[in-house]
View 1 (cartoon, each protein chain N blue to C red):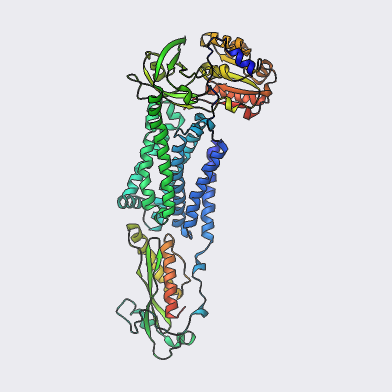
View 2: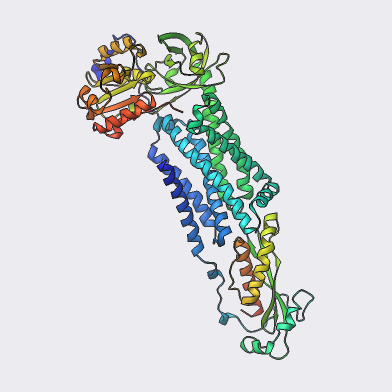
Length: 174
Length: 460
């Protein structure tokens, strides 16, 4: 009986140790990019639509658009607020690629959404149905790729962060 | 040495003993180290594959993944231990293998249960659903998970029936055949490991190695448990030669066969016997050799303990026999000292009778202590006395219940006074589990090092 208890406790302690090691090596390191590295030149990379397209981005764009304040810090294009949509490169995860699209108005991130994410299984759908909105919201609030991962959606989260980072870099915002 | 061999010739049952076998034996410590390394590799697979664990749901899911990997590994190790692989049987012994198997089996079933609960719970937390909904989602959307669930339930059933308490209420044969469902369970659970196992979906190498491990164990099972007995049956063509009564409930069965020396059986070992007569052919049972193996003859001695042993006593000469084996590690090979003490109780005398006959020993170096509660329980009295005379070995019968004797003849004091330089002896013990255990403790207290005590039990 004592041996049974020792084995059970040993297994549980071993599991907790293994898992806590993995918890400590935090996600931030993968995408930490300082604001200074972002090249300010708008090279209009992939799909830069200069006007607000019909997507759900438009309603938020004009309200938060006080471009004057923001343009001073980041953007070289002074004058009228330019709205552009940039799609980050697809980050592949174990369950499929994640692609994030951002809308930038006058150097400010005004909308973030995932245009592609794993939906292959019902579990993917279940997880991502709450993880993606949460990540969108976090990214919009942070206006950077330094956001928290969503619990239970580790792979989607890390793919999301990678793609978001690439979109921010392309847009010259990060 | 030569003197002993010459002396053996004029003896009664004498025939040249089978030449010393050069069979390979696995070292128990090495086997445990290999098993541990495999478990570490399974954990490493998870470690290598998991970038980060984030949040409660992820914790649960990953704990589920680790326990799942370990369970998948443990199940295959458990089957391998029971695959009757000769170096394991000779080096570790069927008895110790069975104990490892039963301890490991309980652990593996716990891992399987933990794995399924943790995965369901973890998925439910991550997906913000409840456990019941999550369970049905998993079962409905993944056909492999459905199969694995059936497998898990089978393993739990086998585990419960194997628990010692339950087993006493079950016939040995029932328990034995229930155990075959583990093969079905392992097969059913296999597909979900690759179809849904995150670590195998993306690593062809891991998948290949894992599949190779399963295939190797399946091959070993097929070869050693199914093909080898059939091959041996055709090669040796064993038949019952005679059935002789040794005591009230004890019979000896002499079996004739060809090329039996090729089996490299040793005194102290046993075979699993299958008598091909109506009512007996479908089951096999382990019985020890009760005489040194001869090139054409083997002898076993059976006490009527259950359905099977009673039926064997009624077997007719000429009945064909299949023998699986030899098994057992308590042979001359484990001996470390010049002097040997054999302690037998009840029907446990059978392998010791064979060792008493064939263990190389100079006059005076070999002692047999035979414990029985009643004179009627003593078997082989004449044979043992003849052997003792021929080999100049000592033979003590200790008969009578402890209360009648007024002392415990197997206490440390009694043993030490009965056998001079007890500590210098290798001691082979065979008897009922309770007696064997108390003898082992008494020997340790009398100062005999544990590595000089050799014991195998037949409790299943």
